[in-house]
Image (cartoon, rainbow, N blue to C red; front, side, top):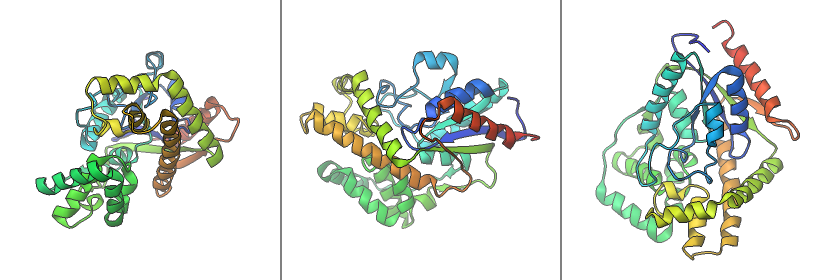
Length: 318
């Protein structure tokens, strides 16, 4: 697809985990000459394949994918870095005459791209940060997440309750500045670099929850336990932000003897359902999203056709 205006065209496909974004995106990309840019904050890490449902080599051979396998699990990766890398990838995709497609469920990453957030470095307090890490280790990051929800509910909704790194950073910003992270750490550009169409996929709750449970079972069958075991054996601490991603933290708890594997799987399914609910709460506040209902029995191809029609109508004449 050629560039249609001074801004870069960008098709965003979002929605809760397990709704079927990847399957639909693959079909859309084939029909619209698209290339997929991952908006999954865990897919940037090498060696974390099964638990993040990364596209297979065969899928990547059919449709190019970007922003996957960029870092080792013990390396940092920021929203600002993601934003810059998306812009570079989108420019290159458009130069090839293709359509950039941002696909995933990490809300803050998507908003940072679409709204052109300008990230402003805030002052730091190493003593406060050390104290927060001590609490996270002793009582769990969920305690800090609850504190964050009181002072900055917007940021808390965008951060997983066990993502200690981002929780502590948000608390630090508030501690130093007296203002919420969501207010001081980012501002919106009046006109971002993209002409973006945001499409959201949703399913009825019971159907989505069944898919979540089935996906966890499939991940276990594909070898998630072995994948997490290899990461732990390689020296990656369960406390690393990457290792607190869904699937990895629960299995790591079982492999280190803290809970049984049966309990880990039960908790993983529960946590994933809760995460999907938080994603929907976050996105329901966004009026620009064109929601597409995935009714039971519909195929990925049928949903993709609806998305293609939305895209063609949106950019028609631009």
